Length: 438
Ligand SMILES: Nc1nc2c(ncn2[C@@H]2O[C@H](COP(=O)(O)OP(=O)(O)OP(=O)(O)O)[C@@H](O)[C@H]2O)c(=O)[nH]1
Ligand SMILES: [Mg+2]
Image (cartoon, rainbow, N blue to C red; front, side, top):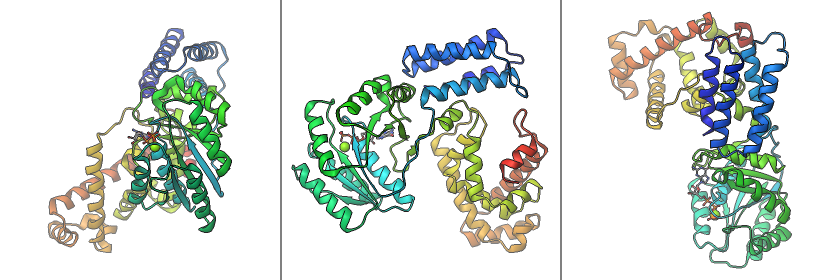
């Protein structure tokens, strides 16, 4: 699994003065992980050779240690292997056709995309156009109902032309921005499938034809991407099941090698488990360097500058604490935040996270039940105040005490952060602050 890269890079970073032997060990580790992740062996060897050449020979740019430089080289090479540039996703009116073999994730992804576009303020319609699998119509319909997404389909209709024409009518009449068509799969790209796709293509005239490939395909994704591309043309790829397959690295590198662009990756079965694929961010997360950039951007969105400034000055009230909890929610929950922070190796079991999020909700009620004075100056909260707050928020006094303890802990942590103890090697406080827009 690619996630093991984090440990390998971590091991390298822990060496005091890495030389040739350490660099070779690092490269061997990377090779092993990539090969296990089903990346084409030829690509792996080319990459290793380039890393070694650069890491050992090139002059180190001023301002970087050799260790930092080596990691930068590894990072650049992995980005090159896994896709280089992020594709831009057009936010205008468009018709999208999803293609792919059986079980690749088309139907699930149709609903995910409808939700993705709706979140961005576009009116999206999901269309069931798999006329072969009897359950396909219901599968998509149910998914759409569950998430209140607009759906079009004709039950038991075996004539694909009628379905597509019907969908187009609704698309025009109701003035939808986005039309997403879930097509039928086959066990392979055979002549029947090609014929059907061509038929849909000629009536629908889609703006985008996105091939859905499961990460389980590994490097075989190359042949599939080429095959679909030659037979019916594709404008991008969505690699699904990145969360559950050990072959994600193989699939991503193979798609890139086939010249097709990976646009999204599927990272779970839930509707929100769809990510725009950005190789740079993907690799920084893999290497455990933390997607600091993403975090800062998101943080900037949800956190006003005043608050950031106050926080770093150590004047951290319970209101700030409350906002932190809210921000965590807006950033997609604790697990997302942990993933993005530069803290390698932190993983929490899912149920623990859930409990924690549950707790956050209660904390918000408790803070709502506090007086303004209590919020500004939590030190005054004594036993009787705790009891009142618990009553007011429908919680237990122990739970209120726990909230106060967590607040104090966070306050302490922020003080330490201020003193720089939490800052990463070499990172200066002023750089950090400028990251926060200060
Ligand atoms: N873990 C995980 N599972 C996924 C992901 N995307 C899809 N799945 C699961 O993969 C299975 C197949 O997904 P479908 O969306 O039905 O695939 P399909 O391409 O429409 O399949 P056919 O209609 O049979 O060709 C389902 O159980 C999905 O829940 C993903 O990103 N991660
Ligand atoms: Mg399907």
